[in-house]
Length: 341
Ligand code: MN
Ligand code: MN
Image (cartoon, rainbow, N blue to C red; front, side):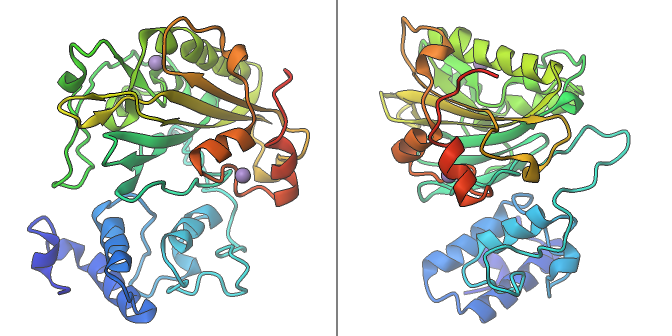
């Protein structure tokens, strides 16, 4: 069953290394079920979705940062690469907490610094983009959620590229939603990661216009509370804060494009506000967290009318958000309504 044709013709000899990793993971984990195997194949097919091991015997030295190693650990059952030697669920704890920044490049940040929400329903795929990470849901035809850092390094003078397009990173046999699928629907092509949060270069801005980052959003929602919260977020960055943002959708109030795109009933967003340059260790019980859950409807109020708690969003969506924070910190910041800064 494990042979080149299984993966389709796109898999060439150039991808022998992931195949070797697959083989080792397959052998060491036992990969007892087809679901395990599908998980492995999905990881390999997603290409850039996870940091690659440098060699087929993958170990902590292969990763630039602890979060990189953590994502590989989290992607497999049973720690097949031995990344969690003390078994506490944290991979390669001696590695740096974040990837070193490259001079003259946009800040890479770590879009999952505060934790990676579970991938959501089956048929979801983690996609790592230039500038953000998202969990794409094949059945919905939209993301489940997107996660990104917002700091001054992402903001510049690049023009809005407006080049909405199908996402070429999806597996070849998945339907790639097209911009025209939204035409005549009455819904805006709304961004999860806003164009305005990614203006450092034209390429980085363009990366927000793939249709996997787009949701069918009412004009009222997109142009009023959602947009105003986006603007407020950038104001915070101008005032010296770094933000860690997760935004997503839930619910079903109809379909577009012959049923291939689900219109969410609600859009939600969680924003963690940290001093510029601060890392995970700076998050404590006093850290401000903004959480909103806004109906995807008409006649809406301001975003402040839709403040809620992270706990409520977790309960509604089933995700564990901010999961990299200590439990006692999560308990406090996730149960508190935003009161202003
Ligand atoms: Mn928008
Ligand atoms: Mn949580």
